[in-house]
Image (cartoon, rainbow, N blue to C red; front, side, top):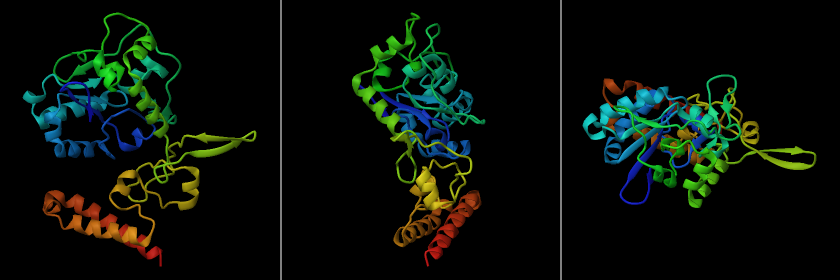
Length: 302
């Protein structure tokens, strides 16, 4: 959640899956930590009060398609009357934003795409002929003014009536504090989920620090989601790698005590009343699989 000057409370929400955000994202965006769009629906159900309390909910995704479904569900879950005009999305998604703003924009890293390219970085300078706008799910509108940009929101969510040079307009409306946060996010993008480091290579006697890339063969041992792992961790742990979400659930422990703690945590979750009933059958099955995996890893230490 981002808070700016005055009483404005804005949520910048990334609708994409967690592994897509590893290679690129906007500074300050809320990460629902989803593996699929179905999990995004569950996240909305669990954060209804937070969404209702926001002055505006700004969404973005790869090309804008998922935002159409996501914004419709947010309006339905929160209540159309309470969200009318405040649920907005980035037209054309990250793809169009990078076309409009290029390296001068506030998007940090590359855009994840579902083809052989995997990652598409910003190319060159921004275009100057058109201006990206935001739309609500009920009526077409732009963000109120450029002050949102000064609070770290994407510049493409503010509209300018004059087709000025995007680079100049962006530089003039973004504070130095936000610029520092953007640079910090750029450094964080492309970091190993296991150790937090980068890849290291030698070239002509010079040590190079390179961002980690997603590879199709490197997946979470538990949920099979893509994992961003550096070369050193991939060689050290092999298939015993875990995504950030599974690690947060206690599955990524390395020592005996850490794994036992994860086992105890999953057992407590399994006994939680919210997982009972036919409706939660799939959740119980998922917990059983995770528990079996942790017990297998514990035995492997013997």
